[in-house]
Amino acid sequence: MPDTRIPPATTVLSDAVPRPKPLLLCLSHLRWNFVFQRPQHLLTRAARTWPVLFLEEPVYQADAAAPRLEISEPLPNLSVAVPILPEGRSREDAVRDQRQLLDSLLEGMAPERLIAWFYTPMAMAFAAHLTPDVTVYDCMDELSAFRGAPPELIRFERQLMQRADLVFTGGQSLYESKQKQHAHAHCFPSSIDAAHFAPARGALEEPADMARLPRPRLGYFGVVDERMDIVLLDEMAALRPDWSFVMIGPVVKIDPASLPRRPNIHWLGQKSYAELPRYLAHWDIGLMNFALNESTRFISPTKTPEYLAAGLPVISTPIVDVVRGYGERGFVEIVNDAEDAVRAAAMLLSRPRQPWLSQVDRHLASMSWDRTWGAMRDLIAARLDDGAAPRTTTTAGVRADA
Image 1 (cartoon, one colour):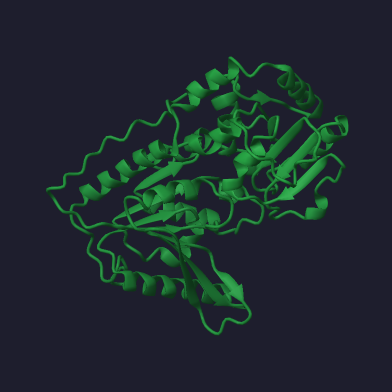
Image 2: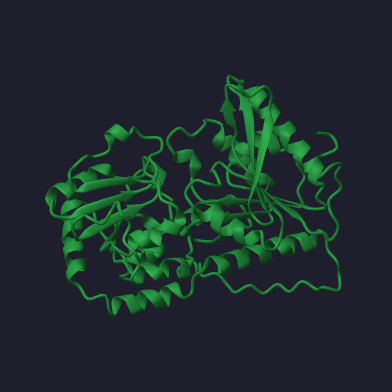
């Protein structure tokens, strides 16, 4: 297996040679204020180096008289722009609107250099005319395998892979797929902000909506969608009605009525990233009851190291990257069905946390989002240096023949 450990950041940029500061334009299918995950971890750190513009997918409103952008600044040096389009817009009109709004915004910002950072290939529909100094495709999931994926996504991804200078992947199995398609693919698996979750090992106040739930508690946080094995959850809860199953996260793309409803399954809804340690502090086991389907074939769940940083034993279905990165090392218990999961949970509940936790901590010590971003930044900076001067453009990276 290739070594996917992230090397320490090594690039030193000389202060003697002034360089125009580039704008990092991120084109995302995820909302900034949705679940705090890979894009937020990386781009909050990017904003310490370069100004960041995070462009979301459009919102359609019946009362919108004309296309416009709503812009906010959730963090210093990081702006979020949301296209607001009139309801009933055709797809062709929506693409044109987004292109015009983006061009107008970049013209007003007038960056001397441009880094285009794609999370969604669908953005190629309105951003392919840009000529960035560096184009990055941070491929965190195989989006074409997700429920409701647009049929043209594969075509746009092919175009993006041809255009990209760098391709980053969110896990080892995804890297093994994408490296066959791009000469400059780099594996950056899900990392950890250990300091954020470490307080869960101590005495944190118990959230009110969980305070009366019996122990032991097996918990999950994250998006609840087609990637979750709700049948497995239901069967586990049926086998152990004396255990509490605490489920945190927004329900997306599946009917909430399809979720199992038992007295010991508790759907608490979405919580902020800041709130998570308080919940984890009062759980006994972290659950990763992922379904085994096309949408989970390449995933590398960020919650794996987050559970571990909180000091929680973890049970997971056999997701490839979890098995290879954590299961084979004894950090996560891999289970195949409900009976298997209940047996593993009973074992974990009776097992002393040490020396297992010490081994986990040694592993986590080699990981951090700071280190991940530092290595990414160095690769981008090297590309910027290769191109010494900004590429010839008209306004803010827009091609002259656009």
